[in-house]
Image 1: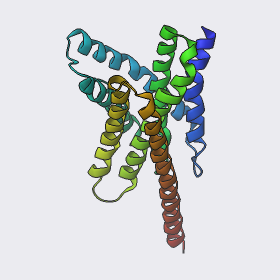
Image 2: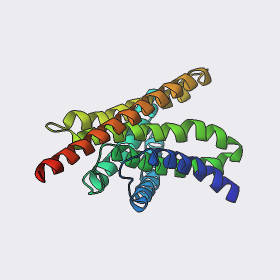
Image 3: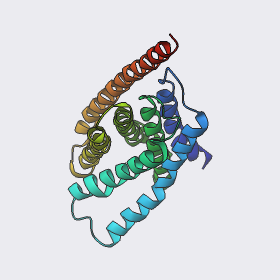
Length: 229
């Protein structure tokens, strides 16, 4: 059991550390990042309950509905809702890159508990494929969600476009990911190109968020310099 727990937790913590260390300006409090990770972990239980109700009531009529609604939309909406109401207005969310840190934290909290449950049910021999596919994909959905939440918070004027993108893009990408796994016989030939695209897309958002944070601090520095001159 200890081996399963270690294999289930390690990928999530490794990816969280990777993206946390990408924050070059004002690293977030570890306590708040871990709390957000825990929030994501707790989300597993209400989402599993709702998905169970969908199945027992025979509401899942197709792979398309299962992939895009009962999995993709449901999971990404709960993560987005939690980030928006618990983190978005938090005083520590003080630069664009912070959205990525907290988006990854909540997503990996969810993915880690889901991963542990899967390994308990199916065996530790699946640990590597789980790390490469579902755990990594959840982290990247969190990157994308967090990037656009950061854009929304630190963009002057209307924020609705960025808030909508912070929910819609992760939901659509998550839906495609699950649809590939659920409905395509030769899914393995499609999922790996999809994951390469997802990593490329996510890392471009990391790079852009770094630039946005750098510009944010330059503006703050210039404003302070003007104030004291």
